[in-house]
Amino acid sequence: MNLRQSMAGLHTWGGLLPSWLLYVIIFAGTVACFDKELNRWMRPALHEGVVSTQGADDVRDWLQRNVSEELHAFWMHGPTAREPYWRLGWEVDGTETFHNVAFDPRGARPEPMPETLGGDFFFKLHYNLHAGDVGMYIVGLAGMFMLVALVSGLIIHRRIFKDFFTLRPKANGQRAWLDAHNLFGVVGFPFHLILAYTGVAIFVASYMPAAAQVSYSGNVMQYFGEVMGSYHREELHQPAAAPRSLDALIAESRRLWDGAEVGWVSVHHPDDASAVVDVRRRDGSRIGTPQDTLTYDATTGELLNRQNASTGYRAYLWLAGLHMAQFGGSLVRLLYLLMGLCGCAMLVGGLQVWLAKREGRGDRSLVWVRALNASVFAGLPLASLALLWGNRLIPATFSERAIAEGWVFVGAWLLMALWAVLERRNARRLLRHQLLLGAVLALGLPLLNGLTADGHLLASLARGDWALASVDLFLIAVGLICLACARRFSAAPARAVVPGRANRVREA
Image 1 (tube, rainbow, N blue to C red):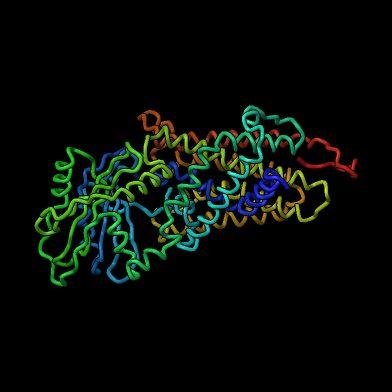
Image 2 (image 1 turned 90 degrees about the vertical axis):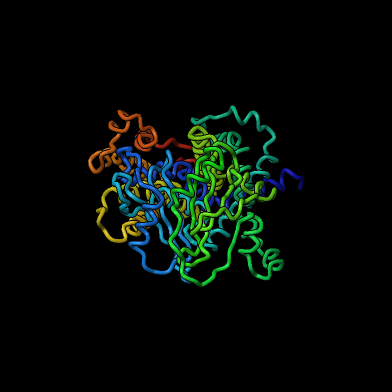
């Protein structure tokens, strides 16, 4: 057995076994490229394009009025072009439980907006499947499988450049799907290779923590503090004096950074005399912003530390910025979106090639593979659209609204899986109906948005608010594509000759 034959088997099974999981990871990451725009769309209070006049001190005052527990830390982020509102998070001392709230920018004083999962839902689904550390390890393992499949696929393709220009959609089922698999694999190969590698590399300290555990006697936080160059001051267990204005410290930080923008502002041990304020620099124009941080005494405003990240940490930040498209603006995020969709199409094509090679053997288990394909490849996008419908239909006053949106997503996906199982012997009809449902859900969302929020598509376009309008425009495009594909699948399936079963009609 030569190298190419060995790699062919490795590519087939190394790519097949995690393919459904990889599809979930890549699809969620693709949507997360525009997570902040999706956050705006899912919060009607942000549709009018109002610029917030609130300040950091106003946000802290809200926290002091509404949270009575002793806090370990709290953190906030001011308005940006993509997120025009204040965000606040805090951790109650001794609980390791995090709370988050976003404030309506339309008022003079901070008032929380209704809860929503927002685009952050897809970001967390991408990197840990909403399963904490266990999910993060599973995603990391899937990323390693993807690297193996990509490298082995490159080795077995002798005509890789010819494949780039070859697509025969009217050929027999296996040939057409193989062309599609090769085309999308070749087009996105550099992107997918880099993203798979960086996705694994940026969590390597979590995947292999033994060195830090041994070197720092189990105090991993000390390890991360030294790597990042952060400043830590032990608690004095004495009451804190009146705090210094956060707005003043932000202004001072801008002056020291020659007018650079400020990102996260965090206060550690705010109820203790040892309280410190960290002000972090924000720069989205470069890959891997060095995370410059200024640390002040929370009471006197004295500058205590300038964070100077090590070379290794800067390299880590560069990899993280490259993976998360934290540079280049909307154009780069759009490129990531297109390449992510190519990755999804590559996986779908690969699974269809695997099925087409085996469907002539009379293997009854293939119907279950088709059911799994329909459950994941079509079920996940349909459940995502159902999540957006839930966001619009669940009342803003509903308690635990974000949790309810999550159950809409889970319930819709389970229904799609049940539907796929019941229709497992009618794959073509199932796909046509799923496409029609996708068209209805996608085309209906801009209409529903116009009925339930002030930021309907025409209003957004009139204001030149392309960030908000792009969500509706993308949904319209998705709906039209689903309609066109459903029309194609409405035609009678072509007959194909199967060895030993010449009179059997095979569904494409």
